[in-house]
Length: 85
Image 1 (cartoon, one colour):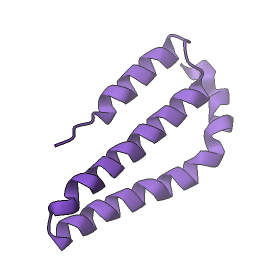
Image 2 (cartoon, rainbow, N blue to C red; image 1 turned 135 degrees about the vertical axis):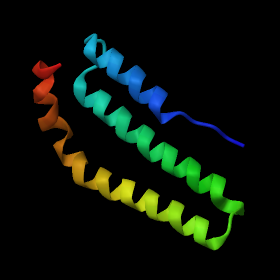
Image 3 (spheres, rainbow, N blue to C red; image 1 turned 60 degrees about the vertical axis):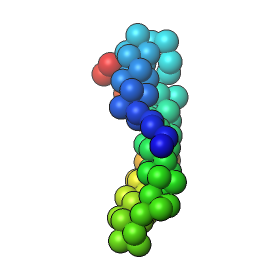
Image 4 (cartoon, rainbow, N blue to C red; image 1 turned 30 degrees about the vertical axis):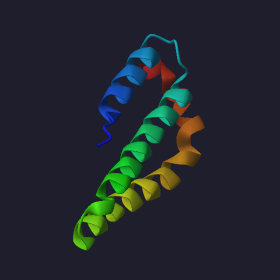
């Protein structure tokens, strides 16, 4: 069984971003990538589950992908809010 902690990746990225070691737009991209990665891992892990379980995982992954498509154009404009950190 594979394990992956997107929370650990998000916390590490947030820490590096607040310390100004990583630019905000890169941090946002890493967080989005870890979110998609956890969805893909769930999809792989559910390959031996029932059809209903795979549908739930697929729905979650599609929801995450739609969120990425919606937020991706806003990565650079959101990085201007770096002064909030």
